[in-house]
Image 1: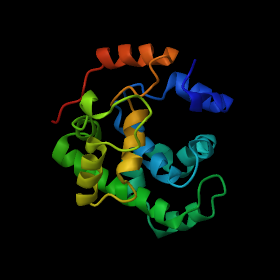
Image 2: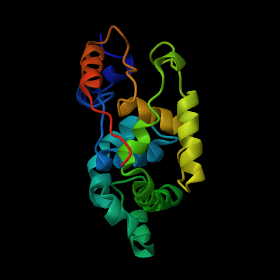
Image 3: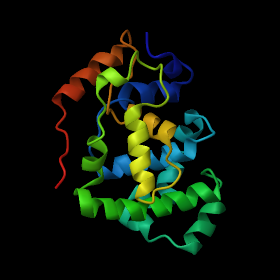
Length: 193
């Protein structure tokens, strides 16, 4: 039996089985997911997932260097794009966060190294899918905020950590749990450079 949320729609099932919880060390994918999680705030993940390709097109495939150069004309273009969530605060946060991601790369070597330095101790998590924040998600959100990142609170960061495999939050009876567990065991954690 899959995690219950994954059975609500075919696109959620596909996302659950192939992506959710598998560890990621690619900066572009991590940045994309941080952005999409902030866009999800107040909405369903299904809504964002169904618009993901539109978001990728609108935001230059979430290439940090390109998004960091977006200006007022890009913001206006994005506010007219019916294929994405047209929320000025969230759009401006993505552009700001791309600029902050470039700064973070300078100090940490990569976005991945910074993020994986917040891999939580399993003892703080309890049973799978019972929490929406953790001490580690609160700490990462606080540090990102101190570095000027926007629209990334502890709940958004926790959802990001779940989806990017910083811990295995699949239900233990879910067949994907074992796959994620194996992937996490074989995963090479990025180090600060």
